[in-house]
Length: 455
Image (cartoon, rainbow, N blue to C red; front, side, top):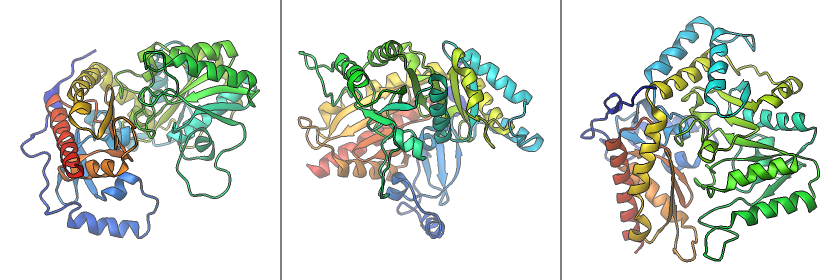
């Protein structure tokens, strides 16, 4: 294990962020965006709120086509955990772009090294692997593994979790859609999950009562309409749902319930894995090993590579689901993933991500007292969320405030992620503390200005 070097990722904060155009988006961004969207449709909310055209990125910095420079607090969208264009990862991909791009699922040396490394770093007996090119595809494959391993077909997931945009992924999660007709396939069941800020059940002292959720699940499984449940599928921390973090006793108790009921636990860690929260798997924070887990986003630091990992006793289930894919496990993808893991190890990124998390938590510790529109602040490593409300007592969501803060901060040179009334942040885990502090200055200043305008 090496040491993190802030000098390697330093930014000159006298020139970054820097907005040199009279307004944002600048003229070149506007023109390019108009050209592109003549044909390209279905943009994300963050682009619709701020249609910048980016040109390049390096480490924690993004540059648009007008030459404006931004501090990146989004990592693409939880993707470039090790910063943009990390030299080691870029070189690894370039090597195989010249040597061997694709040979379907035949064995290669780089794939062999990657699976051996995964078996070494992942917790417990997660020793069976298959590779894919998107998080959604991995989630779909994980569902098939659950069914093959158990001989059952139903799945239980949680409201407001996000598991992708295919029919199976949407059936597991909650996604806004105006498509007519059924949006969820048969055999999928949804239950509430614990939200410490908005609990359904509380103890006498007002704190969340995790046992009540587990009891509800148990009764639902025993007396509900589902009788062929293969597994629970959950995000450890909700991403799209607003960086919603569970109480510390939830996943250990859910693991026990799954074992009691003879069903499997699948963790969708596409967003939370590979150093995002300061661990390889977020579930490691609670000493829980899932039966099936999906890895993605930061797994290849921007290169499209994802993974389904299963425990030793279930890995033969891959043989019965036609697991291979056209792009999964190609040499470039495996090189990106292996190089990313090596950077995490060589530069002690797990520890640094935790240090950043400690800083963010301290920095936001008094925001609910200083700013009435701030209802809650949540941090786990380099995964953050700030929930904006109209009233701290009623906790009514304040979407307009969310848009205002997001746009104000972007205008000051901070690229990040909106989600209605919840501000989401995923700064690269390689970010130096002074850059993190500058980013938080911009966010706090934008909250202050919004609070002042609202009154």
